[in-house]
Image 1 (tube, rainbow, N blue to C red):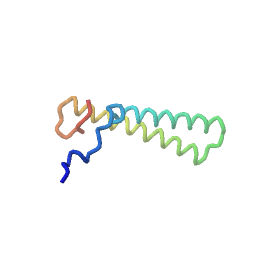
Image 2 (image 1 turned 135 degrees about the vertical axis):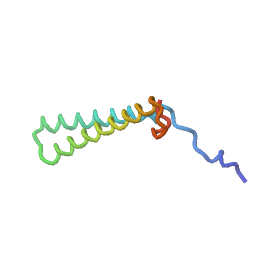
Image 3 (image 1 turned 180 degrees about the vertical axis):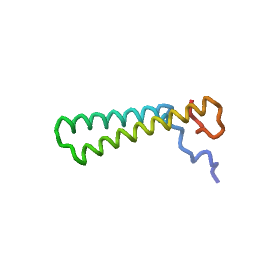
Image 4 (image 1 turned 180 degrees about the horizontal axis):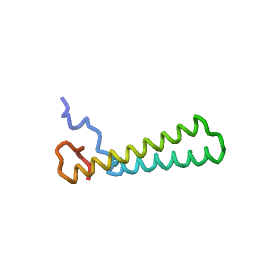
Amino acid sequence: MSDATEDQAPPLPKLLREPGPVILIGMTAWLIATIVTLIAGTGGLTLQVCWWGLGVGVLGSMIVGAQLLGVRRGSKTAQQGLD
């Protein structure tokens, strides 16, 4: 029989585990898409999807910020693993 720890994958690097860079890259992509849509003048549903993408990025930033605040405050219900 093999040990259970041998079957586990190695941990991801810290950069890939942090939510901040992922949110910033996503928001940047949505911002570029919004600007391109405004310049192209397509508007309509495409522009609405771009605005919603930016809104989801802002919401994600707020959630991560609230969790970081909870970690710094020492809350027991805050997400673990955030520094």
